[in-house]
Amino acid sequence: MTPRTLWLALVLGASVAAVAPPVAMALGDTTGAPCAVTAGSGTASNNTITCNFGLTPEQLRQVSKAAVEDATAPLIDRIASISKTLGVTEEAAKTLLRIIGEQPDVPDERLGEVLTKVATDYKRLQTQVAALNPDNPTARDLVERAKSEIAAGHFAAAHQLLLQARKAQIAAAQEAAKLAEQAQAARDAQLLGAAASAAAEGDLTMTELHYAQAADLFKQAAGLVPAGHPEETTNYSQRQADALYRQGDERGDNAALKQSIDTWRLVLQQRPRARVPLDWAAMQNNLGRVLKTLGERESGTAQLEEAVATYRAALEERTHDRVPLDWAMTQMNLGNALQVLGERESGTERLEEAVAAYRAALEEWTRAGVPLRWAVTQNNLGNALARLGERESGTARLEQAVAAFRAALEERTHDRVPLDWAMTQMNLGNALQSLGERESGTARLEEAVAAHRAALEEYTRDHVPLSQAYSDHGLANGLAALAIREKSAPRMEEALTCMRAAVEIYRQSGETYWLQKATVRVTEMEAELGNLQKRTPPLGRH
Image (cartoon, rainbow, N blue to C red; front, side, top):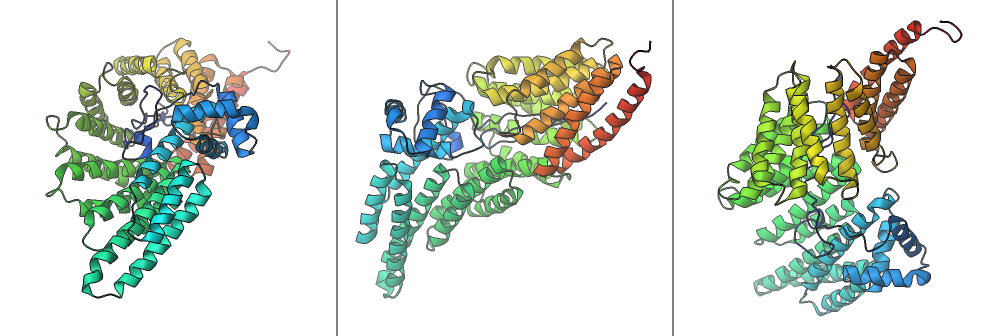
């Protein structure tokens, strides 16, 4: 049996897994909700709710392009409507539209989602900046001016004013350090203000989707906090770790993921289990998320083993009776890590544990209560069942996997969450192929190919290259199975083309685990194609 791939996404900072074209798992960080933008706490990804602003994707692209080109006058009515929906000034709306318009890798159908995400970060930025009240008169004036510039959407000016405020407060702090013991309190206040200004600029940079720069600003903020203020230091370090994770997860930056791991470990030292057990458990969950993401990209299993241990440690405090929803989240994340490990081992113990963890999560994540999280869990449960089914002689587990994927697609619709829909289509295709290989006909294999082709409607190389590679990998396997069943050389040629495309993307993305598997499959398919061509008579002969 040829391995399948699956890609598991994270849930609220969670994890996920993969097999034959890495099976996609869903990000539990994002859930559907009515159109509204608020300035919640935590990371922007946990507070983003997508709006469509009453515009088609093409119209929204037109407005964002106009904002980039500073030619918004003909579209001022649309911009005014967007600003009212977001609850920001028209100038701020233009700036947010410019930010998304400058992102070359955002497809039209995701512009509303990305604009809402940027607007959510902007709202949070305004909340953070509104709380700034420096004791230094010069810095206070600069911060007040920065608040006005941010409200007006003039981010470049706000950057300079916050930088000047920080410099003013640092300068004042250095002057205060020369004073005697009675000046200590004043010095600390200035440094705390400087740290808050640096963190505010970090939030501004997060709004602009510049995660690496934001992480550096949060690190500066933590470094500015004077002794005796551990909570402030820990808060800034957490924000640094999250910015590094987003850089690593969204930009494929493994070095950033490793830095995030180191930073979360530092945070865990600052929030010991004995003093704050639930906070400690939450940090363990966040650390597990990063370990699992990095472990998926590496050929070894050390990071994945540590992710499993980290989630199990979190569950010692995040119990079902104590915090049922957090317990369900961590069960989901544990299942994701176990599934990736199970795919790399010959036995079934880890996969059975993954199934048990997903079913535990479904006790709290019900379809009626949290439909998209329920669908995420159904998707990931289907992946684990499919992997188990591939290692068993019967078809019961594979049938259960197909049922789980089809259930997930009832909530994960193309119109509602197109990329998640594509992910589940790819996973469904993998399971259908495994079933088809055990049946004498071609109906299941044809369904598998159709599902992979559907996934590729959304998974394009320009926007989500690794996802396209995983889908190409799955489509290639499905076509190869059909080619052998039908003794069709053209089918095998198409399969080989798809697998070679996957190899190219794996190599460019540094995806070593699946590159090795796909390279082996290319060699196998070339041999199979040669055999099929020998059996195919030349044209004109019968």
